[in-house]
Image (cartoon, rainbow, N blue to C red; front, side, top):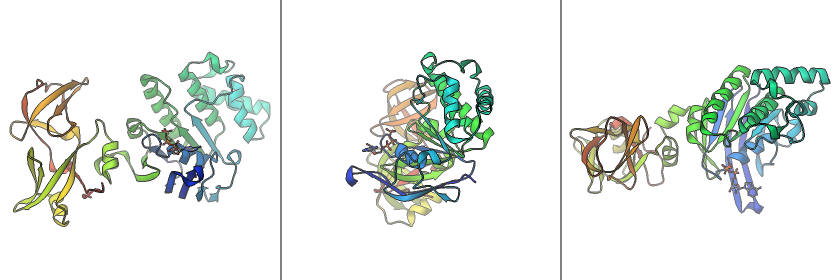
Length: 361
Ligand code: ATP
């Protein structure tokens, strides 16, 4: 069983002046694909490096299966890591690069190693590159070789550290699908680090979202998107980001009224009104995703500041807040300065308290 268990992991640098990872507990199931996502510097790579054994935790434990590997050296952990910069040996051929890891971690003879390399190369479609050196390969081919080198070892766990960051957008999309396909086919537990929320949303069974060294939320991508636990997660997941407005709360006869300065008033009368009524809050942050704002005949009146076409959709920048965007069908194309009416469903409303915690479940 190649579960990966992180138990209260903490990592300090600079004699404690930098806390890169704080009290991180997470269990990755056998065969599961977990994507760790968060902004630059939030501690993703450090976490992955602690799982790989490339970084020693300040405190806490790493378990692979039932074995505590916290003190085990990287080469004695059954994990294979794929890096952003490919990390291939420049003077070795592709075959030698792929066979190298095998030589270090198994006692196969040369023929057996070659056979395994051939099999994996065929699976990855890189057979014709086996005698080339890394300098002769394109970025995409190098990344394929780096993946092949990880796969050939048949590790218990794959660790990916932003493996696609150096590839162009089209190749990135192809490789995302490829990595998912391979992981599914092989059934190997995988932990994938990225700072790209879009990539995270499309890959993996489960997201683990980090900020400032702290794990914010874990869950299936759609769950996290629909029910962000706090304002950070709400804003981080989804593109363009969730619109956020300061509102005051008033209890009215038919529910809860959210008043956004002098711009508009929105009345909640469903389940969310019920939940807010149980608090004594007088202010909150209203979050509404751009794709949940619709243009209607009669709703909240607003002026269109900018129209940004993005292919199938238009982004309308509205004067409801500092950067308030409605993501609408490309067929809806008001002019700059037009006054339009918009609305949103109560079920799409997110509310956060001043500390950023979600008020709705
Ligand atoms: P990125 O996406 O930019 O790689 P990240 O989320 O992977 O970011 P980490 O690389 O894990 O973040 O870094 C977390 C914090 O720890 C950062 O503040 C970083 O500067 C710091 N840090 C990482 N490695 C070291 C180190 N060897 N010495 C000192 N500080 C470090």
